[in-house]
Image (cartoon, rainbow, N blue to C red; front, side, top):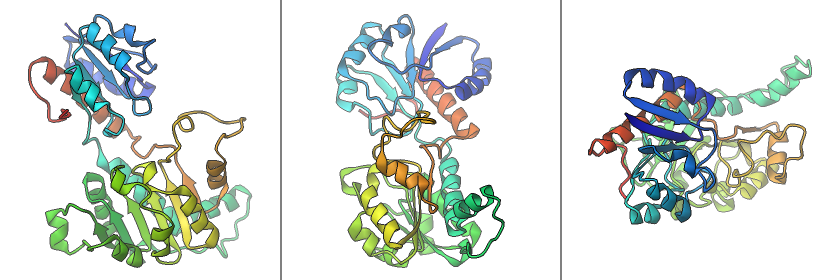
Length: 333
């Protein structure tokens, strides 16, 4: 019987695991909600495969050596991002590695456009009024999405789904990406430069990877080139945004609304219940209290569909490796 040990397993993942196990009666999957560390690596001894969701805690060499010493050669991540993968070490110890790059881009795309529509309609301000039993709608007037120009930066799987949804609203969509999608090219959606996108877009949404070239791409200079009362959404990666520049743009009124699902300093902040405690990040505390800022703690992916895809694809990839094959989710080290 094939034995898989999964780290960092959530309750919702336990639920979507059940039907997968029913389809694989010859596989045993044991789980823990703990992350894979030097202290917990021994839990996987005697297993064939390690499965984990560990985007906040990169594996170090000592842990990888212990995994190797346990006779395990396959590590399957239940996440898409590869920012925290220790490529050189994984290659050094000859591990088979996979991620889940194609789990439900719709989840993030839907979240993106929901938040953008809420910002255009000033719904957080209206919610706050209603919570106070203030039912006077004036002067909280909004903008219709169909009357806006939406700028999409990055046209990978998520960016393309965002474009479909924005077009469904009836909005004009423009896009910038170093790599052009043929169908979007045929629609004439692409602009040649980011400056063009900044100058035209009423709403801007980021779907680019965190690489040196994109670090703080949204900074004071970029914001200065944007239209007045621009709305900005970041569901991609925290380092794409210079948060101090965004705060300055909110203070000046240049930015009419901002929604973040990712934050450059989210490690040690997100995934923790701070209720009744002092939030140890003054900037985040400030953002949360603003009526034109929507914060979600890296949850745009978090749907039942995505959870199932992440669990199922990662487990399937592990079985393919064990059988001597190479799954489509394999990471080229």
